[in-house]
Image 1 (cartoon, helix red, strand yellow):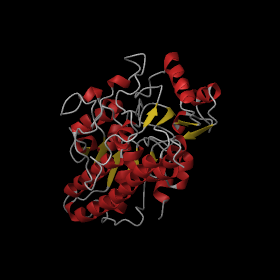
Image 2 (cartoon, helix red, strand yellow):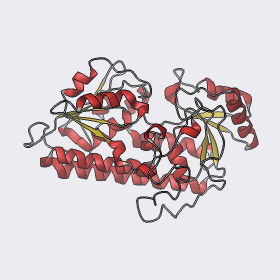
Image 3 (cartoon, one colour):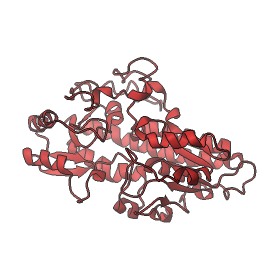
Image 4 (cartoon, helix red, strand yellow):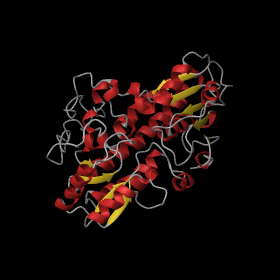
Amino acid sequence: MDLTRRRLLGAGGVGFATAVAGCLSEPGEGGESGNGGLSSGYAAFFVLYDWTETVAGDGMDIENVLAVGEAGHGWNPPSDLVLDVAESDVFVYLDTPEFSWAQDIAAQLKEEDGVTPIDLLEAVDPSDRLAWEDHDHNDEENHEEGDDHDDEKNHEEGDDHGDEKNHEEGDDHDHQEDDDGPGDEFQDPHVWIDPILAGEMVEVLGDQLAELDPDNADQYRENASAYVDRLDDVDQQLRELSDAARVDVGIFAGHDSFRYVEDRYGFELHSPQGVSPSAEPSPDDIAETIDLVEDNDIDTILYDPLETDSGGPPPLAQRILDSTDASEARPLSSGDGTTAEWNDEGWGWIEQMTELNLPSLRAALDAE
């Protein structure tokens, strides 16, 4: 697969994508395909960029508004970004307060002609969105373990992960406030980390592009379907990992961004930090985490590589290592950004999952 498009993402400014969706089918030249042809678009952060680039194929130039090494949480866009986006055909984002800058841009774009905001959060049923207020350390000092993790490793696995692709709504979301899910202000935004929910969003993205560009509708949908097949393979690997895990709890020294994966596959990644990247762990949270490492003889500490500039573990992960008998730290990516190294390798979200996250999770959960 030719990866030159992704490698053209710059490390010192807005990443620009120009060519190649690889072996997936490719729509005709954007803007020349007849009624409603598409030629360009923007995505709010890395995963959405990766999906849009893949589904769009060669017929569109897709830009990731974030530079390599940046994540979208708390990011402040340049003042002229909305003007640049307004000159494109689509803006792909998630309508969540955690990406409030993207919400603001989308609101402004709705007043413009010729550009369509595509909110992929609408593809996720509200009952599948996880509440997060109980995990926000800005609101409460201590993270209560076990609020939304069953005591057993496999929580009703099979009931909602059988032959059907979509799990039964509500069966494993005990912490939801009601059947319609939590209010917008209390939703964990990290829906893209769950490969099943990701597949639902990619399918909707394909449908949305097809509606905007009917001449290339079949190709958009074929590209989306091929990508969903790859996500299904990631889902299967996560199931196998969960089945093989000798422990059901790992330690993640980063913001608590993997709750959708935990909820679906039945293991816990305990984080002292909380869901919000801006939340600071309290001394009690850190002490609780250290106790958890010692009580469970945990050897591998996971960390977010976007939270360190040194190439090694960030201070929180290093503190846990120094305070326990754990012997190694491994990276775990939440997918909202990419590093220069991964960019050079041409990694998209699936490669981050298979080449980085799955090996790290196997080590952390003793599933090797």
